[in-house]
Image 1 (cartoon, one colour):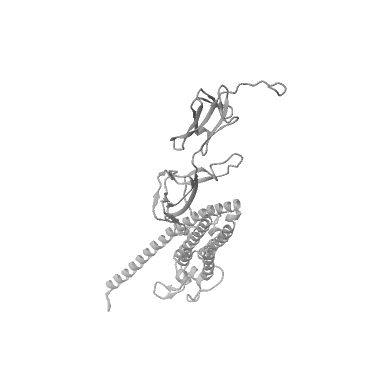
Image 2 (cartoon, helix red, strand yellow):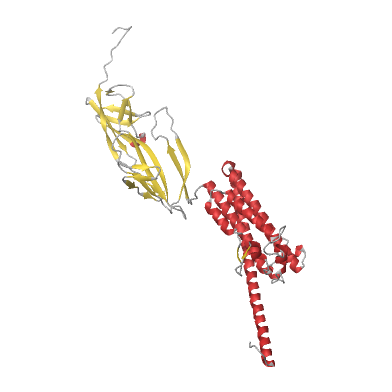
Length: 449
C-alpha cells in the first residue's frame, strides 16, 4: 500500500487487500483449529487404548500377588499407589476439560460429560478459537502469577509434580526411570513464543485457543498413562528378574548319585526346565589345566566348546582313570532383545574301575552233575547291560541269578561282556573256579560208618 494522498480507487484496493488479508488469516486459523481437533481425537483414542492396556497389566499383577504374596505382594502394593494416583489425575484433567467447555458453550454438565465418562467430542464445540475460558479459569489476569485453587493450571501442576515424585520414589535405584520422568514432567520456566521467560502454566494455557488447550490436556493424560505403564512394567521385571522367552519345557531328573548300593536310598531332584530351541546358547568347559573364574565368569586357560543338539549341549569325556571327576564351564546366551549373559556351572561324576564279581551262592567250587547257583555282577553296570559267559559248561538264567552246570574239565572260567551307554561293548576279565565231582556218599548209622 502506498502512503500519502490516495485516489478513491487506490483506497478501495487497499481496503480490499486488508479484507483479503483478514480472510486469509481466518482461513489459516480454521485450518490450525481443525488440526488440533484431529490431534486431540488421536490422543483421546490413545488414552482409551492405554487405559485398556493398564487395566490388563494391573489385573495380571494383582493375580500374581494373590497367588504368591511373598514374591509379588510388596511390589503390588507399590503398583496400587501408582494406579490410584494415575486414575485421580486422569479424572481431574477431565474435570478441567468439562469445566472449560461448559463455560464456553453454556451447556449443562451432562451434555459435556457423556454417559461412559468421556468428554464430548471437541469437533462439536463451537467456540474452538475462544481464549477467554482457559485464561480466566486456569490462569487469571496475571500470567506471571497464575492463580491457585481447584481446577487451575497451578493446581494441575502441583498434582503432576506429586505424581512424578511418586513414580520416581517407587523405584529410587532406577536412574533411567527418574531421568525419563523429569523429561516428561518438566515444569521449569522457559521462553515462550515471544522469547520471554515464562512459567509452565501460562505458556500452556494463557491466551491459548480452547481447542489447543484441550489438546494439551489430552496430551498430559497420555503422558500420565505412559508413565504408569513404564513404572509398573519395571516393577514386574524387578520381581521376575531378567525376562527370557522360552518355547520348550522338558522334565529334568538330577540324581544325587546314579550309583547306589543295596539298602541305601536313591535320591533325585525332578523339575521342569525351560529353554528356547530357536536361540541356542554356547557352552564351554575348562580344558586340561584350565579353571573357571567365577567372579569374572570366564575360563582362564584352554576352553572347549561343546557340540549342541538343538539348545542342549552334549558333554562326552573318556573315563581315563578311576576317581572323582569335576567339570566346570560357562553357558553364554543372548535373550531376545537383551544383552549377552554368562552363567557358570559345575558338575561332578565318579569313575569306578569295572570289576566283575562272580559269587557261587551255595558252594566255593562248582560240582558236576548238579545245578550250581551263581550271581554275576559288574560294578557300575545294571543287570540288563551284562551278558555273562562261561567255559567248560553251560550257563542259564535262574530264578535268582544264574545256574551253571560244569563239564568234564577241572576248571571253569566265568566272564561277562558289558554294554556302555554309547552302545559300545567291553569284555570283562573272567574268574576261574575249580570243578569237582560230587563226593561219593558215605553211609552212617547211629553216628558210625
